[in-house]
Image (cartoon, rainbow over all chains, first blue to last red; front, side, top):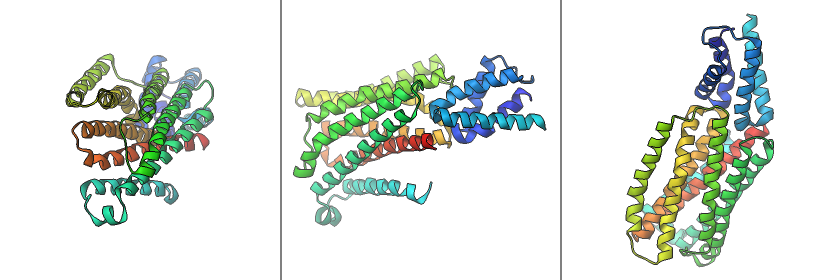
Length: 84
Length: 264
């Protein structure tokens, strides 16, 4: 899955929790910091690091339990997307 | 929003309209024959006390639900303390308002009102720090400098006429202190507004919409109070009651919404 597709999947799942604008800007900022290039494919390791960073931010708004659930939903959505 | 969750907001809206109506039509039969000024003061006192106590309890419950290493946990605790301190201030005014139908100024209750500000300001700063550490976009240094300059200009415009009025020293100090502390509160408030706008109509967005609009009304209430007090326009006090009822209800509503998210 490319970075763009990954970001779109994250935004779709996290939008109802933290809003689409926040989900997109936070994911793009983390991708940039982690050196995940815009057009390239996201490796499993990179994805897990990204989800870890996003989970840390979500904790503040949702608490750990709900944050884990939301990150699980993102992981499922990306896995489904990659399997197509 | 379900019918049951709409009901408290309908009650708050009716209360606000009741006090706005009192300011606009003070001579009407409703405010003279049915609801005397004594009753109106008592109703406002009960509303404020209930909202502040519930807000403090709900904010503390949010703190309790978050993990010990969650950076937002101390912020909810500080918010709870700030609301509790305001509740203590309101409670010390209650005997005057409920029994005598008067709102004396200043009173020992002002100690608690003033004490609430360091807690509220610290709560917003801790929230800001938590969001910054989580990597959320907080704006550039230039934007923050511009914001500080803006608050400085507003401070000059607002505080000048209030500071220029005559009266006992303690009255004047307190009349200036409230809007001045509100302006300090305004700095993290505006920065948090940037974050809140990005949250949109999401679950977290609803929490921040309620909390931040509550704080905005709190600042507005204090500034109106300072102006009406220093300019001798106490007949406009019903507007101040309406603003504070709305402010406390919105902040309590924000804490309640956050608690529902954490419980779900």
